[in-house]
Amino acid sequence: MNTVKFGDGAAIQCTVSFHGDGNIYVYTGDLSILIATFTGATIINDWHHWQIKAVIHNTNGSVEIRKDGALGPTYSVSNVNTRGGSANNYASRYIYRRASALDAYMQDLYFWDGNTGGVPNDWIGDVRAVVVQPQSDISAQFSRVATGTSLVFGTTGTGSNRAVSANNIQCAFVDSTQTQGGYFNSASFTTNAGFTGNMKIALYLADGDIAGGVPNSKPGTLIAVSDPIVNPVTGVNTATFPTNVYIMKGYQYLWAILSDTAFTMKANSLPTEWFYAQPYASGFPEQIGSLVSTIGSQRNFCISANLTATNAGCVNDYSQDNPTTYNKDNVVGHQDMFGLQPLWFQPTAVIGLSLRSFVLKTQSTAKGFKLIGQSGATPFSSSEYQPLTGLTGFDLDLDTNPDTGFAWTVPALTALQVGYKINS
Image 1: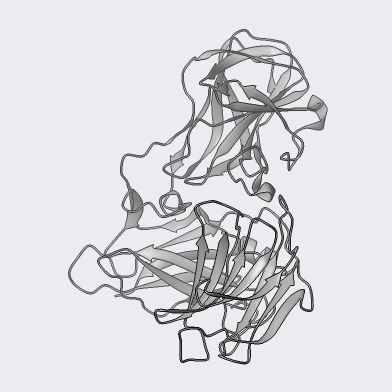
Image 2: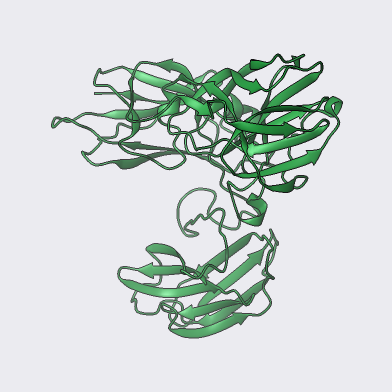
């Protein structure tokens, strides 16, 4: 059971509950009085986009539900009590709660007030929230702090033997998630014997099952492909990549190998491995999640790269890791500016942009900072924020592009630079 609750103060006014039986139930209060049932709303193993609009009132309340971008109500109920336990005809807080017995996965969740504020403040259709993190340093003046982290990406050592077949993409997990971000442009691996032939190494993000609600489960989006390795030698070989390959903290990746000749290389441990029959000349597909088949418990490849540390790599957390990696400074005027990782899909439109940072101060005196950025030729910044001694989130919302005054576009987001600056 997964619930969305609207509340005011300590009171829960109404609840919309998604159940494993495929129905959606609407309650007055906190699962108190059932007022409506949307029967057969969904079936198991399906992803859907849901919009829910609740009008809070003790007699004229209503709940409207729209499914998969529908332009009108898929289900609605009106003239009901949606303000249980409260004297106010508005909600002041929102709660999402997932029961311990998991009935559904949630990918994105967002709330907005339909009575106040700027766009978006009403039905906005089938949208999703996408996290785009700092990837590269445009300028870096802060000092990096990375406690107990490693800049070795992948598995070193000689390991055990692993056969690699010809014309068959074989994928296996990088043996751990990265605790400090950075970039590399070459990786090393060891073969048992040299051979006459060609091979390439690729890196995939483990997002291949996200459509099924299970992130970090199998290869999905192609990140990078090495240059051809011609006639690999016995022992250590180097795969060179044409551009820097940026690794984000907390993400799971997979190495992939494609060769026109069968050979044996070194591998380690026993993760699940995937394969996909593919001629060497066809290369690696951009998306592989729906194509791969499981080999079973095999071995991950002894492929490793030494990352070059970046300031971006200390703040591009999958989830904030305070106080493991961060950037610090106390000089007024110092700033870091970053380039962002590219979007991995092409949206129809961009609704808005929100910059989020987590900041704390380690001194007793006041210290002010701003979130900053540049879009095209136009720099922009937030007002001055005063960080606290505890880690606190600070945001800057940009509904339109400061450079044009119009909606954001994918090229504008791709070229966007963001960062922070000590202001006082």
